[in-house]
Amino acid sequence: MCQYLFTDAIALSCKRPKGYAIVRPSADEIQIYGQSGIIPPVMVKPTKENTYTLIQGEKYWMLAQTLQMEQIPAFVVSDLRESDEKALIMFDLRSHGAKLDPITEAISLKQLLDDGVYKSQAELARYLGLHRSAVHHKLQLLKLDPKVKKSLSLNQLTPLHVRTLPGLPAEAQWALAQCMLSERLSAHQSNRVVAIYRANWKQ
Image (cartoon, rainbow, N blue to C red):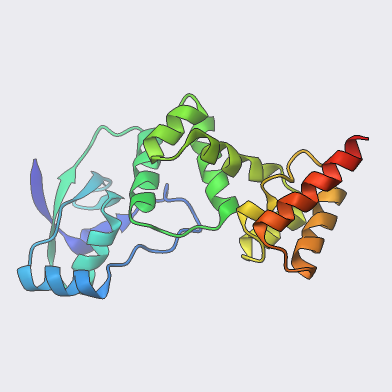
């Protein structure tokens, strides 16, 4: 049952993956919802008396604060497992286009699998609306050399540039990544260079 709660009685969950930017409403959404005075309900979990943890609807919670709405409609869910809370928060962030660096995202996905929230990569992919191979490639990023991971986190390289590096020795990964950076190779060119290296390495 939906009820109205004080907006300032709701806080972000400590289970929210670190690294995600706060989901903020667009100028158009602020104008539209500001005119109507009605926003979609959020989902929360009670913590202490009259305080709540936000599970889903981060953008609408931010919208209520932007519009200085004293109260917000909410569904209160009491019997929520920690694993389900993590999964729902991740889905909410992804569905509203929250940005996260590739390595932090991969860590979050692996945590969902390690916690048993999802039994397989295929099940996790279905829940997030991704192809199974996409989840596989995201998780493979965790096998990269630490220096290559840092280049990804700094947006110097993209996951498409380095998707074929896992499995190679760490020193080779970094040497190839440096080549990609210095030569300003495209993702396609980078994968060709790695393919050539692999062919010679196996020989």
